[in-house]
Amino acid sequence: MNIQEVTISGFGSFGRPQTFEFKPGFNMIVGPDGCGKTTLIQALLWASGQIDHDGSNEDLHFKGAASLKPAGQILVALTIAENGETSPLSRFASKNQSLSHFRLCEESAPIEQFQDQLPKIRLVQDRKTLLDLAQQTPRGEIFIVDELDREITPEDATLFTRSLQHLGEKNQLIVVTHSRT
Image 1 (tube, rainbow, N blue to C red):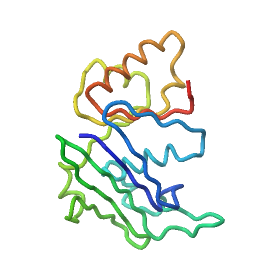
Image 2 (image 1 turned 120 degrees about the vertical axis):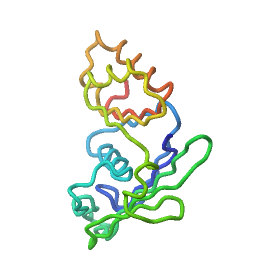
Image 3 (image 1 turned 90 degrees about the horizontal axis):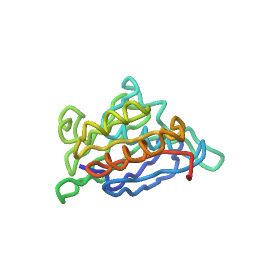
């Protein structure tokens, strides 16, 4: 299973709809602080049902900006690919709702009904977890590696690179970083 595309609207720092495309295997997101990298990660985890912010979506809504009103609804829409077939998945919530709703293909329901069909995304935020995962050789998973390059010393660079390559061979890997090197 992998994510082909995500569109985010009214979520966090994304007041206007933003679409990101991903490929199977290795993907990289590079940008300075404040450009929305963390919001993208949160949106992917929220859409897959892995974070819920204690059932309140209030802190997820776009708060507004000089030229944009605050968002009344948040939406994260994914296109999921598995075994050559694609499926649309979306999660949405209005400001006045305490619960969000999921829509998979044409069916809308609470998360419990879709739990087995949602993508499993693993957030990797420390070097040891990355190295352990590379040794386990998981298959068909989605990993987000969040700014681990800050922890890597020159001595570890080769091992870090090999670990990323190994994970990316059989999984979708989304690496988030500030560094262009």
